[in-house]
Figure 1 (cartoon, rainbow, N blue to C red):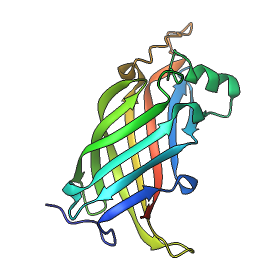
Figure 2 (spheres, rainbow, N blue to C red):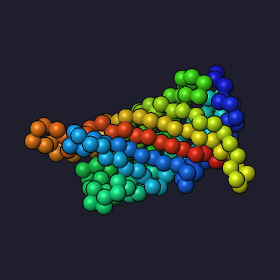
Figure 3 (spheres, rainbow, N blue to C red):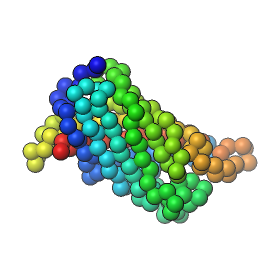
Length: 182
């Protein structure tokens, strides 16, 4: 069994949506990167006595997608991508957390988008614990993963003249989370 990182204590730690981000990056036309985020996120980390006894549960509203372009956001909410009307939530539930160094972990779990659930592993880094100005105990985590959008039924296939995909299959997911001890 792996001890908890220094300063992290057992209990429920809730995601602070004001100080957290769920962002993604896709390659556009094979030459540039387009970034976006989900503005409505929620969830918690239930920290056990050991790392292996801990669990993550999180969700995002598909309709809160923001790429700074209203037309693109509408397309991403459509049936070509998130099918947000039928599947309003993206969710993640961990199945295992494994140490990969003193403050680095692999968080494995079930990611559900568009009604499709796949196992995804996030490289996770613990940033420490502090006390905020209101006296709350807070902790920071960063996590990254790369998924293939087609694995989740997002099969939009616009191909440019040189054979490049308008939207890459590989999507990088990055999470910056501030957790507040309940």
